[in-house]
Amino acid sequence: MSIVGLDAFEVEVETDIRPGLAKVIIVGLPDAALKESEARIESAVKNSDLEWPMQRIVVNLAPADLRKEGPGFDLPVALAMLSAHGQCDHTRLAGYLIAGELSLDGSLRPVHGVLPMALKARELGLGVIVPAQNAAEAAVVSGVTVIPARHLGELVSWARGYTELAPQPPRRIADLLENTPQDSDFADVRGQEHAKRALEVAAAGGHNLLMVGPPGSGKTMLAKRVPGILPDLSEEEALSVTRIYSVAGLVDADVGLVTSRPFRAPHHTASIPGVIGGGTIPRPGEISLAHCGVLFLDEMPEMPRTLLETLRQPLEDGEVTISRANLSLTFPSRFMLVGAMNPCPCGYYSDPKHKCTCSMGQILSYRQRLSGPLLDRIDMTLEVARLPVEKLAVDDAPAGESSAAIKARVMAARKRQRERNQPIPRSAVAAPSPAPDSSDASATPGLVAPVGQASLPANLSPSPGVTNAALTSRQVRAYCKLDPACQALLTRAIERLGLSARAYERIRKVARTIADLDGSDDIQVPHLAEAIQYRSGEERLRG
Image (cartoon, rainbow, N blue to C red):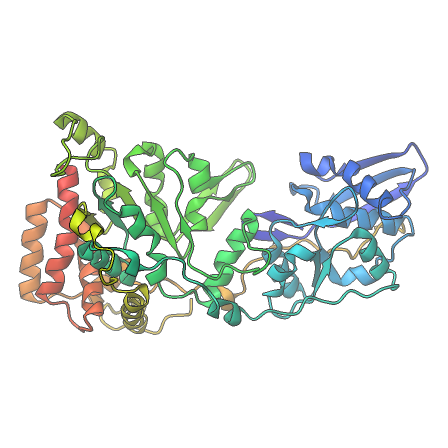
């Protein structure tokens, strides 16, 4: 099995053994790790009390035009050699997809991309044989027999019918999601009620938000608690996120599933491929690892301007396309952006307790590192003030509102959005319609199936975004209608703040979210006024 993007491609391992100088030749576009597998496989075979063929061995990985990379081919190549040499019966292996890295003593190490492999196996009606540490991950895919293997020797014995290996018990995704712990709580945050309210609005509508404040004002603390007020992952979302983490090798071996909303916080020195994704064969970056969760960018102006500008397309489309000379791959990246920055290079502009040492030119230059088009895609800008020492000094002060209480309101608002925000047909703007949720005797055929591409089945693909932040222009006109008083207020605000047409729509989306939190069917003046307030911070950043 080979992973390209988030999809699994079948690779058929063929082995030919004939008299000649003892040598192993691997063909079929193997990478460096695969070329080095000869030494690992030889040691593993000898240390498993098996005989190493002292002959000329040719291993072909078909199709020949697909690049093969990674150590996951160790196990199928070893089994193919042993089958061709008569030490293993490939008949029992024919109904399984196989992947695994071999240690020198013959034990198996975990590999990446097991979940896409299991999804492909279900599509083909096959089982999977994977290292025991990957078995929990594969077992979350229903309808697939998962054989956990710990050692090459025991797997060969099982293939020959001498012993039995118990299949991994299937795991219900719903049961795993129910036991998700919450590490951080908004009850730990003293004060900052205005910031908590803004984060609640952002979470309810899936809006991007930027916090501006001096060092120590609590921006990072607030951001880390945002996943705790977002709705729980659905089964479809959990599979979609786990598929990304599986390819990246970040799935917890004990759980086998990503059960909570991702929170990714790349350092401001991170590279563009690290954040956006890339590589010779592209791999997902931080924005894809944040899919269905939160991407927190601290010290945003300190990030390279080129990196920040590359975020514009993912923020708009919810996916990122990475092109290479011979292929183009698209990774999902629908995340909630939470950014943080200081008001100036020293961090103390307008701070009553510290003197700012920056010149006005330095302040303007610092703020202009965030371009207008990028700020246009951030729905809310929030100023976070330093917390008075009086609130910090009271140890027995009552705890603030818990994340559970905020989450209940967020989920109620999201429920209203799911029921209302349906795609609008082209033939009618005002009439919503239901949305679709969203080869010779010595060769060893049968270890894998013919070449094909794996993808999430239609019923496992995450449904289209139904949050207010994901509304199209047609949906905004249908679901974010303004009465004359609201329209007049918004017109004055747009003219005074000098905002763009994109900002005009985003204010209406935020106002719609505030109305949903209030349980209102219509956007009213107080809802719109609060939404404009969250946008007015952008003017001060530009200015």
